[in-house]
Length: 122
Image (cartoon, rainbow, N blue to C red; front, top):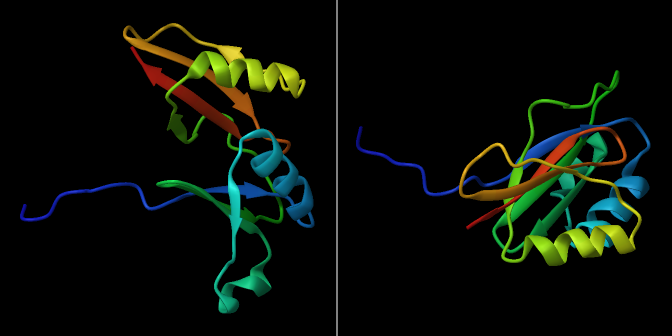
């Protein structure tokens, strides 16, 4: 093959109809993403987009909605312990998982039940 993958451009997660403000609260105030404007032609579909550095998350409206409990994005961070302290201060629960050698990680669920993995390689 003459091509190779450089990066994941974005991850799309689903949310129920009318939940954009709840998504904004969680992804901005809890996870620290910034909202980015959707292209004009896509705004009619609802949802909201977020970005933090090279990590992009699109929240799309799905009706009927079913959360992604197994499939998930995984975001690598520089200081997982600081992230856990931040979540504790915000009263957000998370589940630690030590089943992969050389990786500190935990899972958090967005307000819609979608699983998100946070990792730090050690």
